[in-house]
Length: 119
Image 1: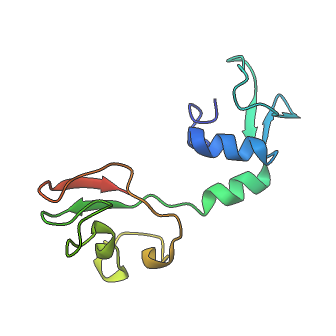
Image 2: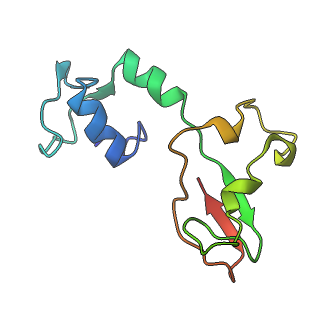
């Protein structure tokens, strides 16, 4: 239910539950696969909220001839475009995308496709 409530993604919820950072009706959640009633109060504990607040989603309009992830030698990766100089002026975060660990494309667009790519 964490994902449906907008607290985090499903994969993140599994990790947070394993770390003991999710509560259901005030008690620590123990099983990520457990069915939780709609009426239950599901919460991400303080440490989980702090961890979640450090995460970012980056949207990139991927141009042609850039690969979303894996690519043959000589093909540039879309991730190489994620530099502070390309940040929109209205962006509130000052994080340097080059220093974000675990940043990966949420979908695959081949080199001959342009469009929205989320990281």
